[in-house]
Image 1 (cartoon, helix red, strand yellow):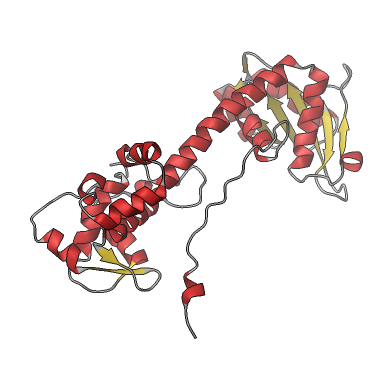
Image 2 (cartoon, rainbow, N blue to C red):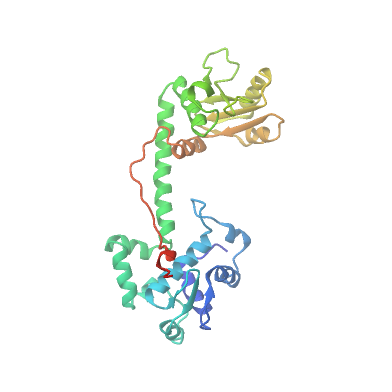
Length: 300
């Protein structure tokens, strides 16, 4: 099964705390995952940012919403227990809790009114995503659109510009040090399939050869074989083949199974790397997400 949405964890979490004991949140994650029969694959699923497991994020937000409604409480970070209101809810013979159910509690409504405008809050309440997931999904959607625009711009410019941009990207990723010392653009017809050369480290103990090709169709195995041949002609051990297109399965399999280390970067990965390393893009807005510093409120 897939990981249930965060509202589906509300009732099981409250039921988990029914005994009135103080429970450790980290243990609740594991116990609820077991009770709801989540597979190891389900448990290993991460948010797009890779910052947290999806199921833990959803249980965490279920906990937050139950706290805001007054059904559970947390007097110490990482622990929680049921309240009298929560016990009363369970005694009412319900078998489901969601945002709509929690709206009967004034403290929950106050929380939602503070959290966002009515239009935004309605969208979040109706969604199966947690706020974290909604933010990351929006960022992913915007980056996908930006990635498409980046690839179009790269295709519109000259091959020489593309080769230069690729070398700058590799430098931006931390290879070789300064632009003057580390990267060299070959860019001539007699280059033997090599478009750029870059030092792998600041001392130049090894070099990486680059082929950068703007492509419309699928890059097939013979193209990779030609690149490997060019590397062997330079007695090179490492190379990167970068394209605005994509690679065939045969090309990918070939690159994996040869002795020469060849990394294939397709258009999708190329655009992602450019965004990640701020090449050809400009940051427009930065949002800082903060959490409560519970240590600050400890009196000595």
